[in-house]
Length: 63
Ligand code: F3S
Image (spheres, rainbow, N blue to C red):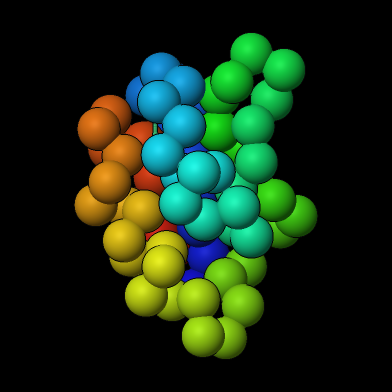
């Protein structure tokens, strides 16, 4: 499982990096960024799905 942020949709709501700081960070303008290569570590799959549902812009994608 891998997560990705669609940069065209992200408006910087910050729920991704607030709720899952192990998977997401933010850039200097507060837009979400996937940490590393976006591969979800074992045991974090549920968190990844939670974030998918919590982004108001539907900017998170799970591959
Ligand atoms: Fe952006 Fe959604 Fe995160 S709008 S900062 S990807 S919660």
